[in-house]
Length: 97
Figure 1 (spheres, rainbow, N blue to C red):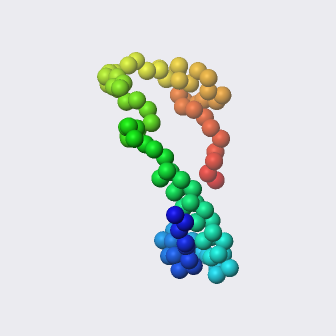
Figure 2: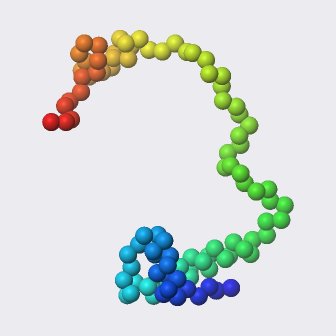
Figure 3: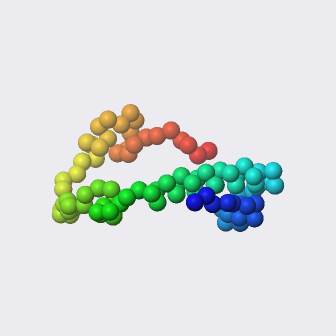
């Protein structure tokens, strides 16, 4: 079933999407929207009998690990590979004048 989209509908959709369209743009946009809706209509023809609806693209069988305190880096370990440091801090170029 082909959907006919007129200029008024395109203007309404453009307003909702906060798009600025000229009158010259309306026919091309209407054709594009008709083509998009035709492609979406193809999905109606797919037989989905027996297909479980997808809730999430990944299996969620794993639970997050327990929130346990782990040892972290010491200040010297954290600064070990710093190209420049001063008084126990990373030294970076000034970015605000």
